[in-house]
Length: 329
Image (cartoon, rainbow, N blue to C red; front, side, top):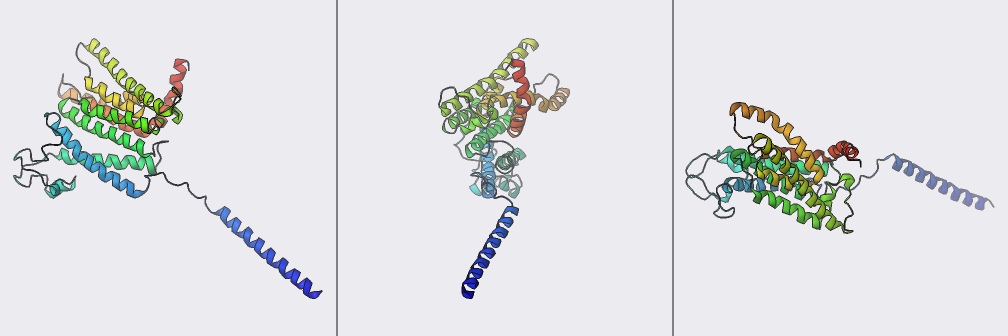
């Protein structure tokens, strides 16, 4: 009898200890922070470094476009060479940013000075690629932007805006070969990855026009391109009518078509209304220095597009209810 009681008591005591231990572990587990959600593909820091380096290389190619397109030269052949002595530039002298400082901005063969613009374009493009990766994938400034396809399309557009902005600033020209490439990438990417348009759509939802999300995404991209091009074209026509001279270049129309096709029609509207504020100070200063001269608008459309790419969600959420109220929506 005593053995039975002793055995029973020992068994009961072990069970109590186990239950107490479980309770302690559960309490500790409840006190621990929740397991964070897994980061999206592409959010690891090595991706950021990789994309920053890709941006430097893209910037080097943009320099080729900026220099050769206005001159009517090919982008692939001939290879990189000194514009003065025409000596080919070796690969080790063509490393973005680094080679400029190593060579002190001069040709290794003839010593002629290279424009600092080459280095600035490379550095700026690298910073753009890394900065938007940081904003999209690590800081989460926009819903749905932490997708590699969305990021890729936006960087293609940003590259086109950099090239177009520099050429327009220097020569008052915008090349449709650059802007149409960005638009084409936006349309094709929307077909394969509807997330590209979903990231720019209101509430992140695509309209159900065809019953097939891929087709709806392409149609939404076309609507964005039409809105972007349309508002600039109408403004250009009205300005030309009022001032009796060409108010804006036709290149701005194609530039805004690319913006609307890649970012969405709402982004195109935000860019249209943001660009004048960015260009106001420069415009006044420029006209004060050179009365009657033209002010390139492409750089400010590009800067406005870069700004909207970061704040599109907040901008649309702020202005859309008022627009819908005006339209009776």
